[in-house]
Length: 245
Length: 53
Image (cartoon, rainbow over all chains, first blue to last red; front, top):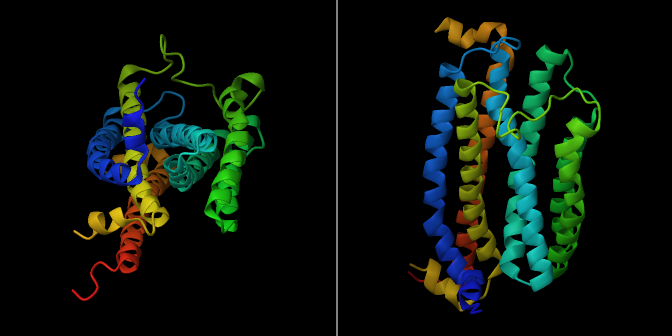
């Protein structure tokens, strides 16, 4: 098999250019999808028969919870690729993912707590789903601070990659926590693809938001990746040609 | 309109969630852009592009 395309893609100048070209293709659809999802979720969807209008929080809670895990998965896969094949661009992807993932983990926890107050009567319980999601936030913080605490870039890449990979264990724990343990958190609404437990006019805004948030992550990751590439390729001659324009 | 903002009595919970989400979404884009602009600025200075016109 011919791998030149891969090496070309993984080369910093090429990735820097491609990222700039791709970012709007993620960003604009994300913007439109999130706008449509917000309108559908806040205006068109009927109030829930049990939760009233409080259920609308799900339109930001579920997409941010999804991203908290999806971004972690992306980060861990990138870290593993960087570690195994020594591809520096992969480490740059991992480094760029961490702060984005942390922000959405925070958002998932915060919106969950705000929803929990009127619905469960408490901001927080130490049940399996909530605790494992909080652990995810600590994992992000650990990966980021480990990276920041090591001056040598290669060592920082390797150490944070290792921690990111070990932390993957937490992802299935978060996902299956609502089935394995008797938790307060409700079970997934969407994993039952064949028979989702949500009415259509409530469901489509949620799916729209999920897709919108995912594309949004792509756009932000690409911008961060460009910054990371510039930071890493400090003395390369291509920089002069690329950014001097 | 008032009904919409009232959110069936849950407005005090619904709106803070959507506000927080807006803050996180805007912050991510602006932080990434600022990071890129700053990295570009530093790289320009390092490589000497832009010096002396």
